[in-house]
Amino acid sequence: MAYLMWRVLTGLHERITISFLIVGHTKFSPDWCFGLIKKLFRRTAVSCLNDIAQVVMRSANVNFPQMVGDQEGNILVPTNDWTTFFRQHVRHNIIKGLKGYHHFRFTDVKKWK
Image (cartoon, rainbow, N blue to C red; front, side, top):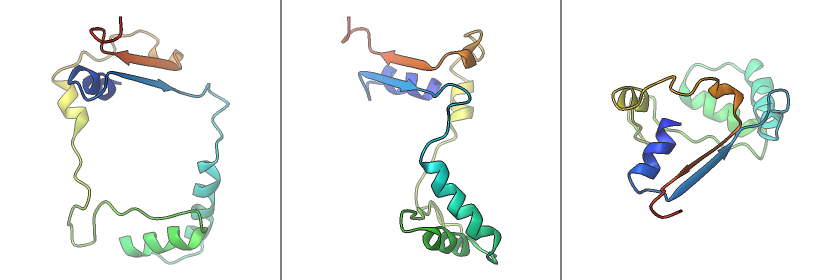
């Protein structure tokens, strides 16, 4: 949530809305795709990152591996440690019962009055 708030506060977005499914109603189509990967993974010898990518590719024609790094340690998709960054700037546990909410909207109030 802090990341989405930060994106609005820094002007990257004017407004962001995110909704989570209610507990018990969280089945959706990607679960099926992960199930296919899991089924093949259990029957395949995997000893490196490229082997895992092959399992994903062979699991179904709808699954495509997206490598974010390689076996040599090269980073293909740079990432940030957002948890550490936001720990310095945002008070945690500020909203009591946060897990009971399912819809959140972050808005730049100067532009959306």
